[in-house]
Image: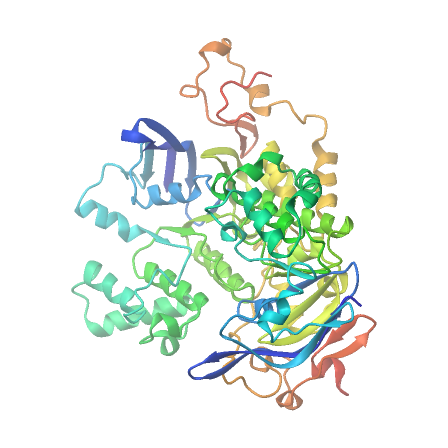
Length: 320
Length: 320
């Protein structure tokens, strides 16, 4: 097991109290696994991703543990995490377009970044050039400023920089959302090739777009309102989901080939609960057509089949 | 009802406007009653520019847009107001469409003072009530609220309701659901389909092929300001003629088909004519040197209700 997260809780401080954005996440990612993390905005997926690499000022570590390759990550400790960042855990941020320093040439910026980790730019440069080739960037991008590159090129450049030290875990946060369809596909396929080449051991791909995950991920973890809803291999999530939220979400997605005239899709009525004082019990209860008395108690996230876990009383309880 | 005839838009760029940049070139299509036409393109393809020209928000450089016999470019003053009674737009970001310091239903008040100054209160309230119900909003839940108290889907539907207060014939919907959450966006899409059922013509601008495929009768594919392919949605998606359309369709992430499979499918269907320009197979000017973009047809018919543009876009003359 490359990454193990158990009962991780990360809240946001606010004047009105703590926002329970990530409330008890327990899961693991195996070596060579690309795990997709899906959910709607505000479900806590980015919070989970960020907490594995850097908690920002508003985030508060509450409980839980994170183990990567047998080492416990001190995620509550800004300085202590420095030892792991970039080398063991790395991130491709959501806005790769603006992730690079605009006043430095890309090569110089990469050099400075490597030096800050105690690595020599000259030693790594041959490998850097090889990887630029691999993602289809010319070597002279290193002598250019970020502004001279297109969105897709910047995205690929950031991907190369983020994985230069062969991190064990790579967190890719909504990296395809701002791109055009054809670029989106190239970037997603590059991600998979990074895993295949062994540049990264395992990967967590955060997105709201399930269809991108179907194309790239080995397994998918669905979150809802700060809680884990369901985790299973990709094909199981897409074709045989068990959690009512996953089912409804997937059946609401339009696809090429589905026409309104032939098949009318339906959304999920209502909206997710506020996480400042979330309701007790199942957080999907208010929107769930299957909700019953038991749902006022919190459903545990239980394994129902090998590699398939669900948090729903209807699936795991006695009246399943 | 709405008809675009070789519409172009040029911008002056560079020092003292010395250069001309073409944002839209020779775009022609019609939007009829009870029809959804989707305008699909990647960023920078000019799809929003076309929407803005239809809404008379920017000037038309060349060509004409005619709506029910009125030339949109020629109208002035009171005629423009009359035009806006029939043609309205809803845009991408529902949160920035509202003034955050006023209540959201102020958009209705503004319609009233502009277009219906003499209508008594009771009659107006009934009208608003009916408009809200037709977009499946509960008046009690959305009236008298500030924008931040409502969800993105509710705000977007309020804007559609606002347009419905007028005697609307054409609605320009520019990426109206791309900012909404997956579980609620389909409801807004279904709403558009219902409006179409009531005889409204909708220009649906999107970058997402699966959304266009879901609701529209007619599809127009744009690339760098030019229409590359258009026609009946089933024909364009089922039997794409232009290589760019094929690339787009094979890059869309689908939920039940992997990228490689889609690509193989398209290859298998039309592998033999890959490379030769369909446009020039049907259209052969006698003298290639005199063949300027200005006097040749922008599109060539490949089958009933299915047109294609030249494969070599704006790159001079494509020789077969």
